[in-house]
Each structure stands twice: as structure tokens, then as C-alpha cells.
Image (cartoon, rainbow, N blue to C red; front, side, top):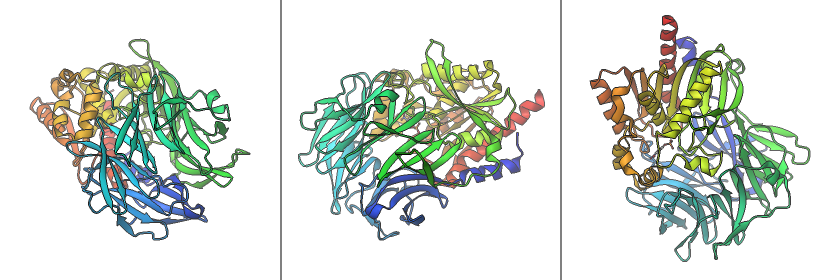
Length: 587
Ligand code: 4NP
């Protein structure tokens, strides 16, 4: 384990590594770049090797501009992390001049944002309802209500599209089309599986159909709402046998740009032809002249922008952060393992080895959030900070995770803190059995924080200690505090089995807590609110449990600045270092 001074200094250096992504091609062939730089997420215009900052105030997220756009649309939280967003437009030739898009729109939780160059369409939630809103020429109007949690992904002309849980049934996701002129919502239920990330392509809509074990591209007629498989000239995409997709868009000349993934690594395809690219994950890609510009990352490569020559496969890094020199020695390489769970299912698990820990050595099971998300071969500052601390990091993609087929994702529905907790446990046991782990710790953020609490109260004796960040302690209380979209999300997660909500809440099992617990929680979190966690602590305190708690002020659920990252990670790392030092003293 490293010293206090070194933990503080190295964490600061880690969160200061600049992260770069390309976000679009603007007027005149300039690139829109989103970067964690200057201490926060900011937007830049990249032209002739130089970066010019676009935004003046904070950016929460932005809309991908259409090719050749002269403006960029951003969403800004105006409620100190509570995620009440306003929309602003910034003209590319007037950096720093932010203009409200619609004066008549009150701040709302925006969770889907599309810009077609003229009109902006969002999915947004209030306390009471989820809706699709259109904004044009300074005013906004609600186009339709959404009967479940579903996000707008793209818009062109009179059509906006998105996907989500719009029909109860088996938990699959539907594709929706909003006819803005007619104020109509049309829902397409894919033949077998879930629809993802639709995009308007001329007079058709393309989307990703995720089946039980494989994914493919579909073409939907937005009038008849009938779909058929999309045929592409190149066969590479099929041969890759995608399980899921990261990205689907239409290029400047009608090209189909798709990024497919399987087992946590992705590949870029244009019209079905594979474009050579560095190994890891690519979150998006754009065609710029005869080049492809993409965002690339891996577990050991912070997000960066690469320019690829699709003919030769040669690539050049356009933008990347400088890594501290010690990082190479701290990260000991990556692994991937199919871990057998209690029922014979295999759990795809990523491992980031610490270059500073022996084998066997102290190991942390790091649990991702979502739960509809995944750990992949992509940069994760939490994992990197843990490996730097001297812990091997095991990251199970428990059932409920994306990226391994829609069946695997849906297996969590109606059973939170059930079989998926057994998957996490199986990964911990694998770590010990395989000779990687001497001692085990558990840590997670959000849904991962929830599963950390579940691990400690349901699997006492397995871990030496745990860190629960932005966790869920009590589903019933959280439901009462949630807005329309998160109430809908919780109902979906429990698949209507509300009677389970009490028993599946860590708050109902505090008496089982045995190991030291570190709680870290943003004060203004409006997704996983603080209050139920305060009540959990009250009980833990009454029962004489050993825990510590760090409430991070002036921030919400998401980490938007370097300071936010420090507020969450520093207490966690110091706690783990102390626990490990204590354990070593005893042994
Ligand atoms: P996440 O946070 O893990 O960051 O996506 C969550 C927020 C809300 C819920 C679950 C996870 N929820 O069930 O409401």
C-alpha cells in the first residue's frame, strides 16, 4: 500500500489526465471536441491543430451536431447537481456567447437530446410526467407524453426517434417515432429482443436489434412502422458477430457508420466494411474527407481522439492527455474471464491488474452502476485509482449488464439484489480461487453502491471492507423521492413486484452488517437521493456498526469536474488504504 502523501498526489494526477472525445464535424470541417480539461467537461472547436473553447459556463452534456453545423447545443444543470437542465446554443463562430434556446422552457431533467440544426428535440421528466419536447425559434412545446422511461436519440425534420421501456411485457425496449407535425407517438416492438439507438436515415429509420445473444441493424419505415433487416454492401459487420452496438449514424454522404462490440471491445464499420482501429472501445466515429475520426479508449488508455486512414489502417493520435510517468508501472495489464456463477451461467469479468500488488494480493471487486451498463476495455478513473493504490481490480458484468445479449440484461428484472449479487459473489470467489486475491474488498457507485451494500449485508465474511458510493439503501423511500422517469425506472427494474422492494433494500438488513463500511454520497443527488442513506446510517449507528460517511457538497449524481472526482475518490482510497494497513498489521 502506498503512503498518505502519495495517495493524495497520485489521485490528483490521475483525475487531471485530460480525456478527449470527438463530438461531431462542424462547418468548414472543424471538429467538435468534448474534453475533460481545465478541471471540468468543456467543449472545443478543433481546427488546424488548435483548440478553441466554446462554452463559458458549465456543460452537463451536449447534442451531437449534424455534419457541417454552425452551432452546438448544450444542456446545463442549473440546480447544483440536481439535474434540472436548461438548453443553450453556441454559435461556432462566436465562442463564449451562450444563448438560451427557449425562454419559455422551465428547467427539467433532460435525458435525451437531439439537434437537427434547426430544431432541438428532448426527452425530459418533471416530478409528474415524461415527455418529448420540441424547441424551435426560441419557443418550446410538448409534443407527446411518454408512457415509460425512454430517451430521444435522433431527430431530422418532422421526425424524432428514440427507444426505451414503453410496453411492460417482458422488459424488452421498443423503438419510438414521434411525428412532430402531427403530434403523434408511434411505437415499434422489435420482432424478438430490444430496439436500441434509432437514427433517422432519409425516409427510413435505422436501429439496432439486440436479440438474446446477437445484434443486427434493422431498417424501419416510420409511416407503416414495419421493419426488415438492413442489407449493407460490406460483409465484415456480420462476420464480426456483434452482440451490441456503441454507435449508429449516417455519414455526410449517406454512409452507415456503425460501431459494434462483443466482449467489451469494439470495431468500426462503414457500410459494413471494417475500418482498422486500435484495440479497445470506440464510442463514436465521423467521416472527415478521406479519414475517419474516432474516440478511442482502453482500460489503460484514457479517452483520446484518433484519425484513421481507412485504406491503410494507419492511425494518428490527434488529441490525448499526458499520462503521469508512474502510471505504466501502477497498471499491471488487463484480463478477461468468464466466471462461473451459482447456476452455471458465466459472468464476463474484466480484470485490471495492479502493478503494485503481489499475486495473490489485495483485490477489490468493483461493481458498475446502471445496472444497464458494463465494464469494458475502456478507461475508468476509479479502476485506475484502485490499481494505483495497490489493489487488483475485478469488474464483473453481472446479469443486468449490457453488452452480452438482451437476455442477459433482462435477467435482473424483478430480482434486484438476487441472482446478480450471486454473480458478483462468484467473481469475488473466483478471484480468491484463481490465486489473484489474498484479501477482498468491495466497492461500487450508484447501482454498484447498492450492490456493495447488498454484498455487505447478505454476504458477511466475504469482504474485508466495502465502499458504497451514491448507493441505494431503501427502494421504497427512494421511490417516494423520485421524479417520473426514475419512478418508471424503479417499476421497470422490479417488473411490477413492488412487494419485493422492502426486502431487497439494504436498510432492512442493517443488523447483518459486520465489516467496516465507507459511505460516500453527493449531497444533491437526485437519482439516488441522500435521505434514505442517512436513515441507513442512523440505524447502523444505533446498532453500533463500524462505518464512516462522507457527504460531498455542491454536487449531484454525476462527476462533472476534477473536484467532484476528488470528493468521491479521496475518502474511498484513504479508507481502503487504512483497512489494508490494519489487515496487514493483524496478519
Ligand atoms: P446509476 O444510478 O447506477 O448511476 O444508473 C441509478 C439511479 C436510479 C436507479 C438505479 C440506478 N433506480 O433504480 O432508480
